[in-house]
Image 1 (cartoon, rainbow, N blue to C red):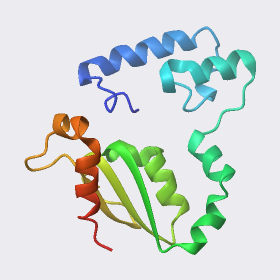
Image 2 (cartoon, rainbow, N blue to C red; image 1 turned 90 degrees about the vertical axis):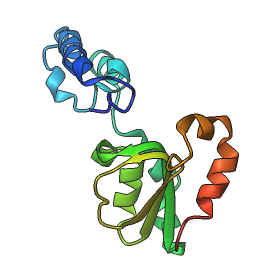
Image 3 (cartoon, rainbow, N blue to C red; image 1 turned 45 degrees about the vertical axis):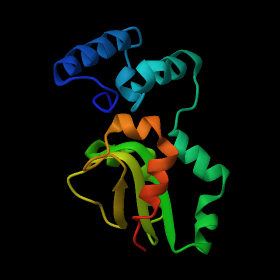
Image 4 (cartoon, rainbow, N blue to C red; image 1 turned 135 degrees about the horizontal axis):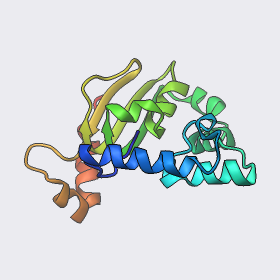
Length: 155
């Protein structure tokens, strides 16, 4: 699902999926492990062979910090991701935060945005890489460009 965000090309997707299915053949019920292909199938191996519990890391973190109660004090929630595209809203951190903060105004900051539409309570996606700022420039001087980006946010 997220392999394109990690650099895989369209022609790589079939090969990657085929390899994961082959990997899954070692345990016949591999389809019962949704999301287990993440991190090259590490989750699948841990679940299938070691009976590990498997749930999204962001859910664990949000529960650990009591996010639902924590956000009661705030009108705006600011979250971020290196690259945000339409796949980000299929379960990545920014989506889970926006989903859990459904009654709040959510702002996303990122290096690069390729989003075609903004879901529900997200009032803005602000990205560093645009106009005359390249990804190389932003990685060379991240603090400079991040500070500049913060000044653009409209509340």
